[in-house]
Length: 192
Ligand code: GAR
Image (tube, rainbow, N blue to C red; front, side, top):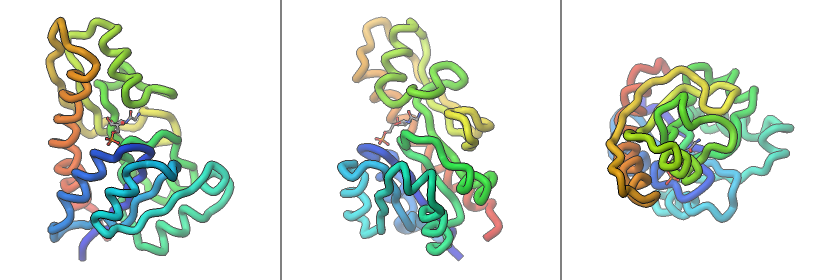
């Protein structure tokens, strides 16, 4: 039986797109739902293009009601993937999906992580820190920003004249290459 994946995303959703493409013809899993806190997020359009249902929630719904958890349960979601999701996962979802929620972060954690470290802010900090390498981290999600156990890390080299766009591109290439394959290897091991 194909495992059912839900993606949480707040923005463009290029990683979500790669996941939707990857699992479109997979025997192991499918992307069954896309959730966002942002009604203008381009990820909603991407979900539509794949005819994947989506759900928009606000802070109150996520943190003060069981609605989102009930939706995940009603749709038989087995695994949750954060792909550029800005908010913390609420306790009720974390407790219901132990070891079944993962995130991707555009830096080699533990450096350049934590609250407010998101997207371009991370790349800017990496450049300002005069790092010789950037990278990505895929990790389990707990109730702190960017703090769960690491699953996979990959690095790229930063050249002296690399701009924000260049490091962002290098990071994205790694994310798009590795996130679908790491998600696949994890969902394959899941017992339904
Ligand atoms: C990705 O680079 C992801 O690593 C980052 O947001 C971007 C979303 O891009 N996530 C974080 O910074 C989490 N702290 P996308 O919407 O194009 O997939």
